Image (cartoon, rainbow over all chains, first blue to last red; front, side, top):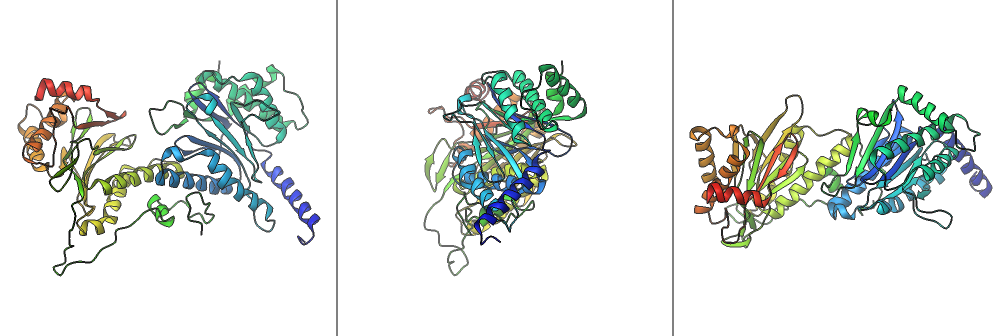
Length: 259
Length: 274
């Protein structure tokens, strides 16, 4: 059927619809740059969603666990061999995503007789200063969204990942007004949790176009916190230790986010 | 298959692969090649490799102290007097090296990356036994070089076991990779006979046994031991009084690794050794 070009386009569109459907229930992840590093945060009870890739690189992902695992292993393998062969300073998130992960995900997606990667990933790399932090979101079709400035948008000091485009857009809209890059850890943790709540609410009401009311966000946040565990990790900006990634236990954060 | 480090290898070996195997698969780890031998089975030796000497480690009240002098030699030539032979492998582990630094530093690099690779891929810390064994395997892989007489490495491995029974652990190895757990102290390198004598004496007939020493007392014994080794072994530097070069001393404890600043070592040296 792929001899006919429009059939190929149709097949790709079907595949896209299928994957979007599979990813839709994925719990949101927020990554926020703050004064002393980058915070990854999500809520959930089951699978681990935040991972260490290399000294200064962390990853959050939603999708099929088998596919996430393959991509995670590949990213660690690439970063580790580069870090060993050259130096840790030569491991860069930009190269990892642009030259290695994205092309492979794109071709897997477009070869319609083979399986695509059912995964959506959010990477962050901590820099020496907040303005050097890099966030990259990689889609199942290899598309990359960065936090850099474009003609239509200023640079962002955060990035989010969620099941639906709408959820992502409103989480970003929320953080654009709520989050400042030079903030404290405590403020970043609270903004991240609010952003998560916004994203999570949007997954349940698919037709909303506006941000929910503040009170509704707070209510939703309270309900979810009572049920689910906080999963969080930081990439520390402090340059004294080589390894900056540290995962945080639920109890380290809970006292900061429950008033 | 694409062999560049950034090439994306889609046939993932899965969880069982270790980092050395990965490096070999990518062609990034060279293995020893045995060269031609003379009739009596030994290698013709045409040059002197750079070697590093005399490291020691002992348990004291604050964990394990690991110290090394700073000299690297080739034959009877001093190559370098600021060599660092006490290397941090992870937050709680130190590998100290006596032998050929070209091999030893590479070995430390592989070990460091192996432990991190394991933690990142498997999402758990490698056990102390696993770490000790990993170093043993690296030594064994290097045995071809040892047989050629150019790449002998005899390390000490000190770590803190945070598991069921938290305690400091200390191991020393032979060049083939046999691992020995030391109860109180270990020393390797050309100056080690003198160091072992001193540590044995201090442990049995000193003011108190090594494991009861405070930090300053421990540092002073380490300095005295290295200085004694340097007295008779030309390959050991001890303390360079004129150049003000002091040994490297690191401490492994429950909290992690502390590198003693030179000023602190100098103060102890001035007060208790010189």
